[in-house]
Image 1 (tube, one colour):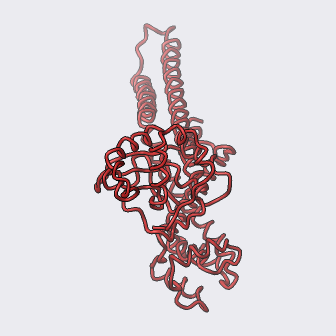
Image 2: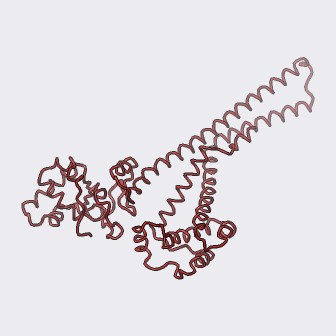
Image 3: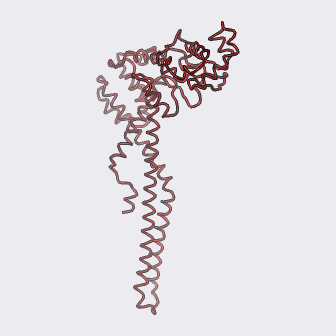
Length: 381
């Protein structure tokens, strides 16, 4: 744990803090430097007193009431964990943006309900809360980026889900319209048959005429049954088509991302040909992406933020390519052997997020500019 924490003017001027009793304010500020990197500390009143105010014996029995004031103000959350009660100072990370997060020990307590850990700090699951916290950060930083990504992810998922439901509803409506059209055609054919035979009502139909009439009726009934079945199974068929389209879109996005990164590898001659022809199945393409992503992260990008470079080197203490003079050869050999790059979990999560964002962008572009007529329209023509 660090030897101190930043106490900002914004926190001292916060009405929620100033409306507490004097003793609650004092203990709140004494607890602030003892928080871990995620703003958490024990919620056991006696242990908290022993940690932050052990010399004031008269406060040992009063600290529980002060904790209740903290929680009532909304600045602190209390929750239970496997290691006992925990206090979470909700806005601690906002006042410590320059905290060297990755260089401090991880919190010994799990995140509170409705929150999850990220590589830059605790993030709320609620998109609205994430957006509100991001608005309170006036500078650009990695933690603000994580908050905005959480706020935008829910909007993208909602848009994709809404588009899928609208497409399914459209197909069902088209199939129902087709069924109604076939029923109308069947009724018209039956009426036309009766009308044609009306002048000769006294004459019985021949064997061939009866057979042809029955065949036409059976054919129309089969078509109606077929389209009714299609309408009933449309949601299931839509899910299967969506899954296939998602797999195709993911493979295309992975190939485009690999080509984008490989374009920076000026030493890899013929990279485009190898990626499109040799590494064209999902498993090999996924392996190739991990190695290209690691190549781009490590130390071959001179325009990277120096603080980010320090963060990257702290995760990879040794050169993962082992032979920096021939890193292209190392990548190709490992990909052909079916090996993935030893990506740090944080970097693997960043790669997955990049792929997901590109898939969402393509889906939104396709909805905005459709270029393919739905198959159901071809079948109805």
